[in-house]
Length: 287
Length: 287
Image (spheres, rainbow over the protein chains, first blue to last red):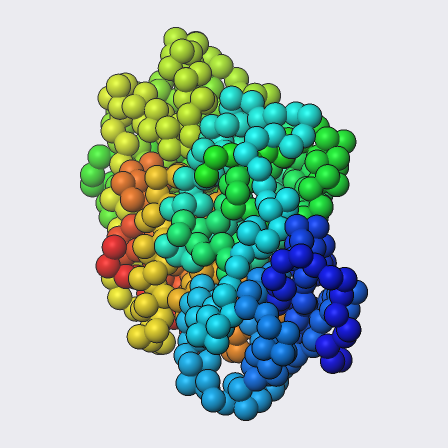
């Protein structure tokens, strides 16, 4: 579990990627490499996928702050992206090293804040060490939702109205640090996401349709997903992927609408193909 | 399925109750009778409980508007409360009589509106026929959440902060005609209600706790329930009952907070007793 050998040479400055759960950090690494960056992946024990070892990497435990900074400094890395969901650690997952103890007061204060405060505080700690935090959208631009339609089917006029309503709703929820997604059908709000996450919300809509609580015929409704207003996209960027499209299919939605430039699309080609197969649209709207 | 004989004599003007689903219309009838009104229940075929026949009543099908007005006029009834959930009817449930056909354009336009518009439109139709719509809170005041604590346990200072946050959130959702309830724990919004209803939202919180998605220890979080800002309480008043308390217990909440004077509490004594048995609070907050 130490840093592996350096990867292929790259033309631009090296880029660290702090890897949350899942395969998405690897996609960002691949797209960043296509864009000429040399990715160095930081795996967090208990959070990151083992597959990060395909890239130059180091494993750290939560709390091994000193080890992390040492690894970055040894490689002259001055930019880092934080990618993928990082669950709030259990106390037992944390191992404080000297680098953490030196910053104990600062770190402790992070855990008294909301999720946004936690990330902002973490970013501040990195930046004071000379490591600039960059967003996945900056280093892997091909992974960001474009403005416009990604599928054969485009939103109808009624869909556009539902998208506008959903976008206004998510914006209104911004100040509560909850809800980056909603499902709207013909002007009616069917579901609002909070702690359960987007996939669970789509499962709920599918269940309401099955049970007859929602009585729409055929495809109905739009999933709208957007960052909170004023959200720092470098730290926390909403994302969808094939699971989201599969959830939208099960919920019999008409499509998925994303704030253009502000939502990551994991495996975009596959998402578009699977939406097309069921007649759903996938579109970015000007945010 | 005709009007039954008149009930016991009452001191004040007779009161019609248009009965939605469940037993709550019967509670309103009982409390209104205690307050000296003579209740006349209107059962809707396919919606109202058979138990409404314990009171003077008439059964109508959805769309039998003429029959309904004739029944009210025959009894000199000039006030009506609409109590309990009325699901939007399937077309096949509707039987249009001459009274409905006369008002066809008006009725048809109702079904193109949101739930609020539907109710407001219905109320307008009644009022133009000389039947004033009154709220359950006006005719059955004992069934409304009071300001203050209904249980042995009272909200803590932290609970009060969660209640304030939940109340602000529900108010912010008002303009979207969605969400009259939310669950908040230690400043974090765990769940927001939309089309699924309060009980399903509480089930979701219980599942998130069971699965470990939420990692609170012991009782955590508050259910906050309030009407939408500007909601016409005569037409649509939020309500809780023993099922809600049972849901809050399963979700391991610390308590339930209701906008005082604006939320109905079905079987209040039982709700308080069952909350007490599990150490939850049940409180009305000044709305």
